[in-house]
Amino acid sequence: MNCHTPSIPDLPRASLPREGWGGRLRTGLGTTLDSAILGAARIVVERALIPDPKDVDELRASARALLEEDLHTDPKRYFTFLGEPLVPLAESKEPRRGLPGGRVIARTLTSEYRPYPYAQPDACHHVTNRDSIRLEHWVHEGGARGTLVALHGFAMGRPRVDALALFASQWFELGLDVVLLTLPHHGDRTPPNARFSGEWFAVPNVMRLGEAVREAIYETHVVTSWLRSRDAGPVGLLGLSLGGYLSALSAGLMEDLDFVIPIVPPACMGDLAWRFFERTSHARSGGDDPLTQDELRSAFRVHSPLAHPLRVPARRILIVAGRGDRVVPPEHPTALWRHWGEPAIHWFSGSHIAPFGRRGVVDAVAQHLRALGVL
Image (cartoon, rainbow, N blue to C red; front, top):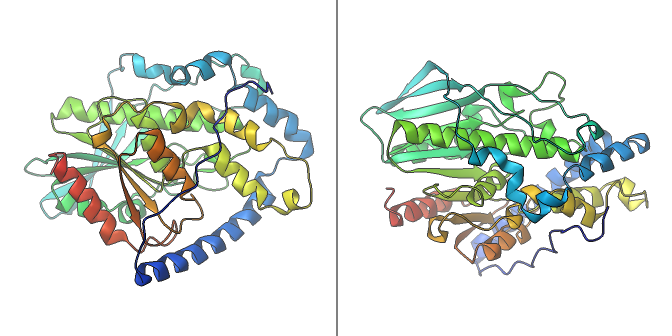
């Protein structure tokens, strides 16, 4: 790879506010749980995601596809659909269940997504998984204060589970309609040849992962635009982990979001990929790196929130991060916070896997939305 290709710099060291002994205890326990999960994830990476030596050339070719000079000069070009008029959507719906004061509706929207026109389309085996956009819509009977679009984490995508992780009941009780979007290649949208929900966001193919991110941003754009066409109320994003990454990226691409709340958001996929690789026995035994740390950061730069200036007013941003997070270490939300000019940030006790400060997260988000006049 060209040594002059722009890369994401080293992430800044996090400096966290002090917490009491009870909080420190919860954070320490969360850190231990995260470390155990990372140990299990290392085994998965070893067995499923480290490319065979014969596949390394394909991996490097997939990375080169995202290193085009035009994309690194203006990374927003990767998301060409944002400047194009939306094709009229076809919609189907199916009532799911009732809620106090409302109902849950399963909706399907048509998708006109097209992959990015790569300069080297034959360098990688990318598959366009043509699929409809699927969401679960929690709707108030008498109208709502606005709509919160919730983006789930990696390997999730089942609305009943996502609703718990993303606090859907709490936002609905506060007067917001809630949209639980099933991200591409997750849940019921998992391709038949995938081994688990969301695998295409983890495969050792840089272009395929880039396409998965790009398609998720397209669908987020389509859904938020569709919601605005139905109602004049505020529309914003709240995302968890992978969903936090996508909501943070959306804040650098879309100017019309009324609020953006990334929870435990990665800031650089290349940095996370390198952290996982470093823990493998392949790396510890001195095995060759399929891609170096700098190459990974360069290849994933085009869709990193750190490569895009904030387009949403900073006062609409609230970053939520875990003090003891070892899956998405505090350096990531800290880098995002600095890149965005230090907007509001809430640190909870606990970690990625064990967010013991859930009540505090709900209170911080509610306070933020009240300050914006959304609630």
